[in-house]
Image: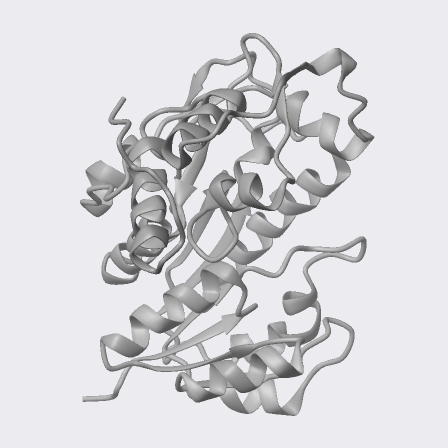
Length: 305
């Protein structure tokens, strides 16, 4: 029996966590990484790392793809489209029959503003930005590639991703970067990186061709509410509240507050059998606070609500 082999276009925060889970299952893993220092670290963890800048096709990438049984891409499209497909579509098409699964990480931003409504995968996307339109176009391109190859391809629309190692509001508070922006009625969706990886592993085992999955935890929540809860876990006062209209946010930051939606996660539960380890931000932040405390970083973890 052939040993499964995962190739990740983009060994970033999510890709590395998935790669580590795959290695723990006995898979071989290869992927692309731009940073030479990080690449050395990943190699030490058992991952074959390959440079890929999105501007030139790579013979080393082509070689590694030939050994892959499963592929995940998290590289965003640019003004000329998806760089992976632009440079390596032909290489991928030659793998029809051997490549068993294609996964593409997109964004719930493709839905645009939904006025705070609950939405599922049947909601018609209405991207409000050029970047999110490019994401939607890339989704279509990946699903089209899978159809041509007769290889199951799936799209995962992601909200904000949080987790340990600097990707959470506790670390932002400690570093003094956190701001408590208040916009009444605004909620954001989020998912812990470990739950995201669990969804991807479940999808690998249930390759439903052409399927799109929204990822989120069970409770969309205002950013200031999450911040205040994190501060309570740390035993500190939260930053002072700043009304959204008076916060002087950059156009880029204001964009995130221009869209409001509540993302349903029922499909990942019903079709993939996923049970979230961190169903709300409370469980996720508590786990991060407890891990920090165990590592010697002072923190209080008393609040349960």
